[in-house]
Amino acid sequence: MESIKAPRGTRDILGDESWKWAYVLKVCRDVADCFGYREVHLPVFEHTELFCRGIGDTTDVVEKEMYTFEDRGGRSITLRPELTASMVRSYLEHDLRNQSQPAKLWSAGPMFRYERPQKGRYRQFWQVDVEALGAADPLVDVEVIGFSLELYRRLGLANLEVVVNSVGCPACRPVYRQALRGYLEPRLPHLCESCRSRYDRNPLRILDCKNPECKAQTEDAPEIEGSLCPECREHFAALLAGLDRLGAAVQRDKRLVRGLDYYTKTAYEILSGDLGAQNAVCGGGRYDNLAEAIGGPHVPGVGFASGIERIVLTMESQGRSFGEAPRLDAFVVAAEDEARGEASRLAHQLRAAGAAVDMDYAARSFKGQMKAAGQSGARYACILGGKELARGVVACKDLGTGEQEDLSREDLKSRFGRS
Ligand code: AMP
Figure (cartoon, rainbow, N blue to C red):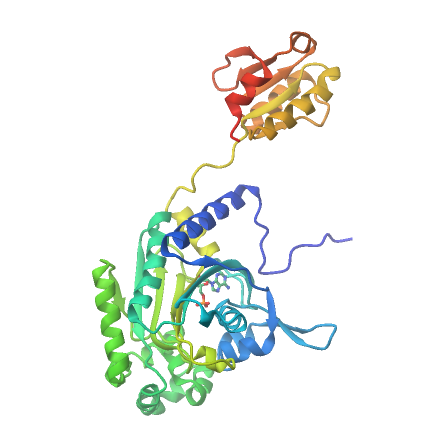
């Protein structure tokens, strides 16, 4: 029988990699604490309707990429493709409007999208997601972008490009949409099939198309900045001034769009020069009309999501440090078979004192255990034999220098103990 493999587009994160993830997530948590964002854990699946209304029916994510199924109770359920809609749902459901605003929330976990897998693009991937809900102030946009920049600074990421744009609001976007349609109409025959279908439903998305011919055709398209209403114009100016005050180098990118009505004003992305085709490490922006789209009151919001796989890939290709890999303090070695029970007890005692300890369970010879101790990367081998047991000591061998000394259990605990 053929052995069963993990589904296409998923990855097992094994021990030689998972500690790097733990490091990245710890830095996320530290930055969240510094910025005053509180962690939330949300369901991995939601009612399908949340994403249809909260991301938008005309997006690729909703049209083609969702893992949707009917549960045993006949409800349409979707594995979350992103977190923003869930965050807003949770905010509304728990009346966070009654607490001080903005509600500053963050979360991390797996997302699911049925995309064509390639380097940096998976069907199950992790995101860290940061959202500030209940404030329209452009300085909150500055804070959110500042959060992502501080995260990457602490992780040591270099060679990043920050691109920003304003996508306007329902008051000014229709004007731009018309101008864009007017520009695109004679060019329609040259656009790809997806873009031709976007023309009626969501023409802004055509600016986002990666197809080289579509890119060339939209090269001289009118810029949205010219159509912004005074409020959006002012917000964008305040955002750029705020980012400038932080010393953040940003590029304006007129192609950057979130072509749905509930995305408003700020849109931004951070691109890595070391990722290849899937080069976005982070994407975010403002969505002042999303809460209403999912049936709530008006709640302005702004946030970003960043892919953990892409952060780790960028750090690896730039040779960044993930802190120290976990390492054993000691490997307990039973010099004779009779000492194995006592070795097990010693390992447990040292672990209870906070030390990282392992031992042999394959009944290896003394020599075999010493070899296993070396291979385990432990700093010390703690050797127990009849001689040591009789004297109430443990022979502690430094596996780096080869030096050995007899220590009492109390001495050992204070040498390795952390708790
Ligand atoms: P989005 O929600 O599409 O704006 O994506 C936000 C971030 O999530 C991107 O900038 C990527 O870092 C990451 N991301 C999105 N889709 C994937 C995927 N299929 N595989 C891995 N990372 C992804």
